[in-house]
Image 1: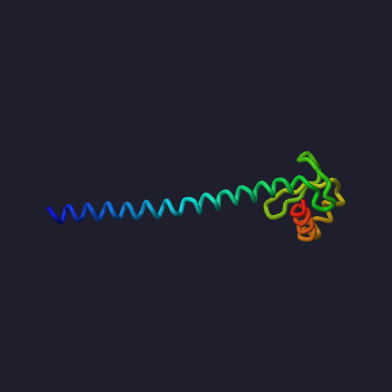
Image 2: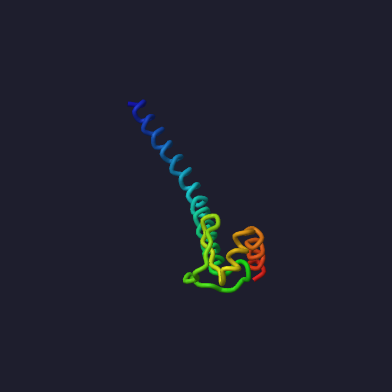
Length: 101
């Protein structure tokens, strides 16, 4: 009988430890999800600004380019071509502009 009670007590203790570990991991996972969502929002906002000339554009623009899974919109074919040649240059400049605002 004592062995049975001891086994039950150990099982309850183990479940308590497991539950505490899960509770500690959950906030970190929630924070990671929130960061990912914030990054997606920023990417969506920057995709609606022509990264070459910083002109506001809409999703109806006929000039677009995909870069690292994000669609960017342009005010003209010329801006689109410049972006395709050197996307890093224009995204870095656009990032600096967003930080300053």
